[in-house]
Image 1 (cartoon, rainbow, N blue to C red):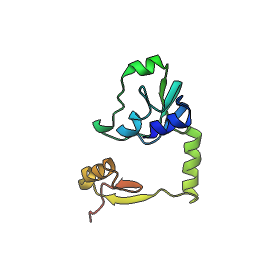
Image 2: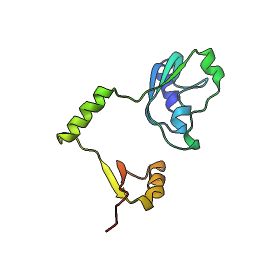
Image 3: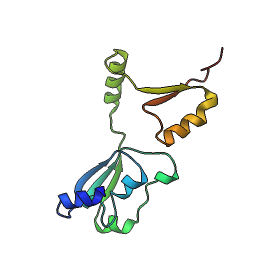
Image 4: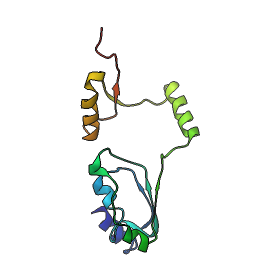
Length: 132
């Protein structure tokens, strides 16, 4: 497991700061707990996430209390970062990867594809898509 590999590389100590960018149950579970990758007084920064109960962050609090660990959330960017990114998109310097465009009638199918990671890039819903 990832946690075991981290513990091995850190001589059993775990890491001081862990950025969790995936957000699945498996990756979240590997971060905390008695044998998780996060070490004593470590900080877990949640950046990534997945929808649905199957990926909720759940852990027993005792190891976190004993190890004095902290969990924080982060959007990963500042407002200035966002403004700069929008500027670059407007100038054509960067592009958003669009997997597909769908109509409003296909909205649930689009959500299902996102939940199952069955897309590369964004799925854009155009309410009038397919109408004439």
